[in-house]
Length: 313
Length: 303
Image (cartoon, rainbow over all chains, first blue to last red; front, side, top):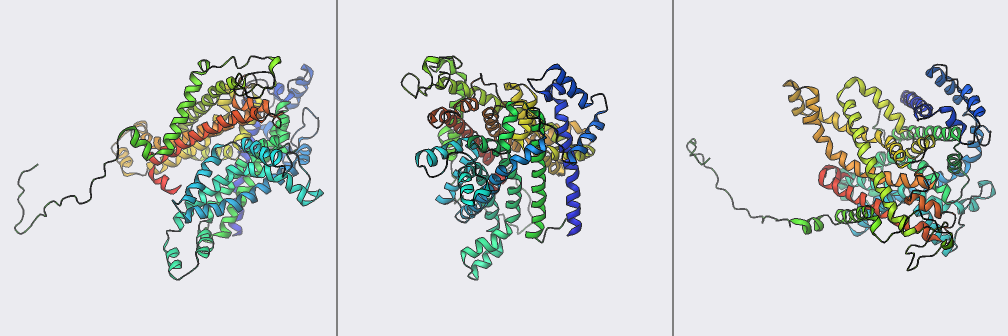
């Protein structure tokens, strides 16, 4: 077990290395002068010169990459052009709302999508199944901001049940915090729920045809126990995989959801950075999110071995 | 064929039995297709409608979608302005109709480019053993960057234009196609008919062209439709947050971005492009699901 863990952790190092190299290289692949891109639109020629000197473009590419990587590993993601603050500080300031939104969405998606998928598989080809699957196609088709505006319009403007926009830190109480996150989480979770429900249904349908399910039925085990104890356990691996992979959707969607609901998180930071052409901030956010994504999928792989002892690497 | 065959004595051949199960004759033609695949038919119909709207945009009672008119700002939908006007007095109906052009161009453009590039990378990775390790590590790395963020980073580096948006989204989608194609190629190259072709001395390019490529097409076409759908959504997201198509070009994402500040009092500015975008993406997804059921029945059973 510890051997597997070690190998799995070691295997993520080259992946992270390529991510870092890619994010670093983007600046140089892009057409145009890297120094001018970093300096942004309002820079004077002197600013550009200063940044060009700082980039050290005369030195070999891999040397520059190694130096940059070394700084990144020490937590130095560069300096924002617009605010002149370290990018790592900006990220630290904005991380709580984004993390809250993603955790609430994740929990909401899992507790709704898995039962929906199980029911759809159990009642395969029935009206309920068709309804759930139609909802899932809709989930893939309606973009997150459309769902967001629709929900905000119905539940905040027309019914006045929940706050329209904004964010309250968790420190100010659980309910005020959650109240602000419900609508964004539902909007962001819609596509995620569709994805998880679809995979749950597909794997459950396969598992429900197994002999041990028939045996369990024959010996009189209740349907609920068959579905949630016998079958779901054996369908867990693909479901957990897709929950891990789907986090990419959450990260991408969070950027937009925060814009719609005016949540001051990393998404807002990214959007502001785009409008101000503040490239170091964008680079830092992309790198950090990619690291989180790799980390989550590492955790997912470790969870496999816990839920399914048959898996040995 | 009917030559009498000499049989050993005593061997009796059973007479042919009449077919007791009546042959099901599936209804042919357009009506039959609609009955068998109602969802796909609906998808094709909506998609066809959107293509029609995009091609004939100037003829569909539209005005110049970029024409400003400060005197008629923020109108609600009326007989004169079907979808109302925005903060700058531009006619939203015309903008939405012209917006179909951008969305379809980006969707189809990304689907075609990502498929071609992903196909080539996947073929090389699957057929040329020593490249596989390198290519797959790069693909793993690229897939670790959430696609929307990758597109945002690329767009932050370049000037916003339809071409750049297509390229940025394509680059973010290529790894997924390459992965899929490689997987298919790896199973195909173990097939006896491929081994036979290689044993018979067929050159590698010919093996790829004649035996491998045709079999990768079905899963790839299905994948391409999903890429098309996702590219349309990503384009709208990029434009919405200001990292996509230049604001002067009417695209559904841009119209929604324009309506953002006023959405609490004028929700229709956001909702009309939203409806068009959602319907189009839904149509592409329905066509994709239908193609999957037709082209790849094994996958259809699983998902």
